[in-house]
Length: 356
Image 1 (cartoon, one colour):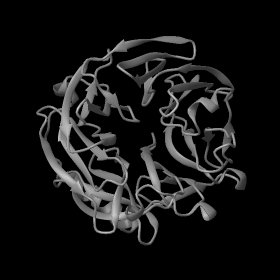
Image 2 (cartoon, helix red, strand yellow):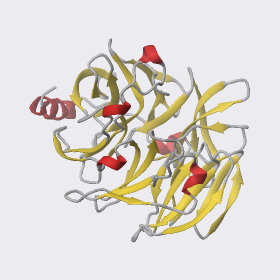
Image 3 (tube, helix red, strand yellow):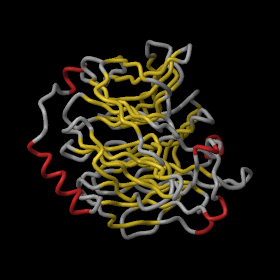
Image 4 (cartoon, one colour):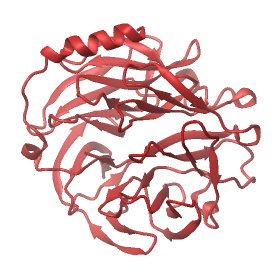
């Protein structure tokens, strides 16, 4: 889909939106996350600000992340890579609205984002036989019909987020994979991740790559503040004995900045999710493989405290600090401490906690 076509579709859709109930009708959830229960049933869960379950809706298989519609009480639950489906759910009734199937030669990467007006959904995808990264474009005003695709700007697009200016940032992880080889990385000798910026019309406006010594540090998960700063959770694909920083930040027009932490090793070279506190004073990075969270000063990037937290997975803003999904519940707090709130349901959380 060309840039002008993308914009034309967005404008044409302005007259096609249908009325639907808002998030208050779904129990006023503040967060969405994918989870599993004993017996391997899989769910999309809405959590309120006080960590109560607003809703729980069963989904077909293990989910990864979700995208929340900016106005309607609808959420898109994405299958874990290399999943080929995403489910659009009515979070008031618990009913499936429609199931999205990736086109031939594509699979989803577990993430997506709505345009600011909620009329279009963009999904990160692997065009695995080319290979190249794609962003699928789906019309949310017409039954989520697929209407085209855009280049992601690199190989292995994973998380994408909408920025405050209406544009998008895309974490192109750099890892070439193919469903015939499960989750094996096929391009280690040439791997080159990047962070790509798109404007609100879907055109690539900027990109940045890590330096040569960090090219095996896959750019996977991202968050941003109102100023346009992007913070990045990294996953090292190089020598498992080599210690490297797993957090970076970026402002357009500058180079990537990498920040290490004395407890980085506890993440086992795999940073799961990342978030900025609402006041910008702290950055939190989870390590689900290591059961650990590390915190950084949000202004200087200096390391703050870390905490051992079993199954620490998703993280999002919570007031001036954070909420982190952990075994049996959530942590509410930050580098200066916190407390765990138990959540009913015996859930095992997946990697992400999406703020609505």
